[in-house]
Image (cartoon, rainbow, N blue to C red; front, side, top):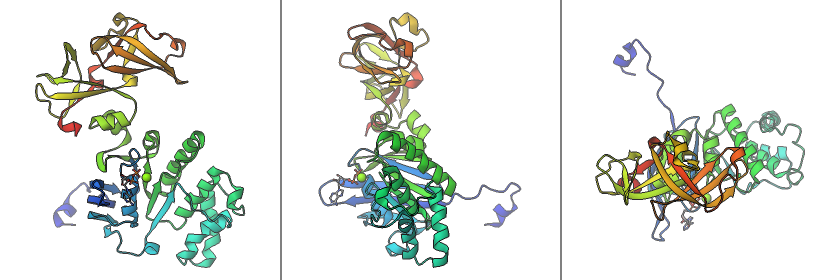
Length: 378
Ligand SMILES: Nc1ncnc2c1ncn2[C@@H]1O[C@H](COP(=O)(O)OP(=O)(O)O)[C@@H](O)[C@H]1O
Ligand SMILES: [Mg+2]
């Protein structure tokens, strides 16, 4: 600390402690495309980061480089300031859970959880107490003597979590550990991961292709596509302010409109002016793509019922899909040939309100339609 900062009347915020830092990390498997392409990010200590992206986007490769299983072809990764790979694997303070849990089937739950402690030469007298504390943490108190095959899928998952955390690693890495579970159990375990992470405060990096999971469990989310980081933000910002059409399309359900930018930052498609908010600089006449989410489009029998919307379009219902808690309508806009809007309708009394072929009106508020500049489309 310098004299100057020591003399300040108001103490400065404690410096952010960076647990994981990746800078310009790439992986070239030699097949013509970079599996990870110039990825840079920082993760603060104690936070829960999810790397979200479609299959093949480079998530596992990035996680394996962070774990030290693979060496990047360029760039640097540090954990608590030290280069990954500078310590042998058994000395690294990293807990891991993968889709294949790799539990020892012939051992009991407690023996599985004790295993990393023995490997790491913990004082033998402390092991039983520590094992039972971590079995309690994952709500398996009393199940320690069960063999793995005597446990349900969800319980096995909990054993794997306890085993990854029992030595109190500084970093927890998760590679789609919930992907094989059925939906109900997966959603339950997502909340469990969140609870346990909050309780222990362990810095966590989770990999998933499930956008709901990313939004539910994370402090920070990185969206990847084609090996590149597309956006790094908190869940609310990511959902509300996608940086490009890929992110807008990958999270939630978006409809897209293409056209030319107008001088005042809107979009013109044929004769129709579509009002929205620009993302990036829009040069007049530039080809632009706009996105709007299904829950932000309003739907009614006539435009008179949508008075407060900034943009109104006449349309025809081309499909209706019952999704339980809502109805999804697919609507062709009459004035925008080739443009289809997908609209959620939540009114339970209005389910089945419209049928295929019905004329309807759709509308939205200007702030809800994002118009991406050509630079934001790359
Ligand atoms: N060992 C490997 N050798 C060659 N290519 C690989 C290897 N592992 C992954 N890839 C390729 O790298 C890309 C990213 O893969 P991966 O990181 O597994 O993606 P994700 O986990 O997002 O599904 C894919 O195109 C995949 O085919
Ligand atoms: Mg993967």
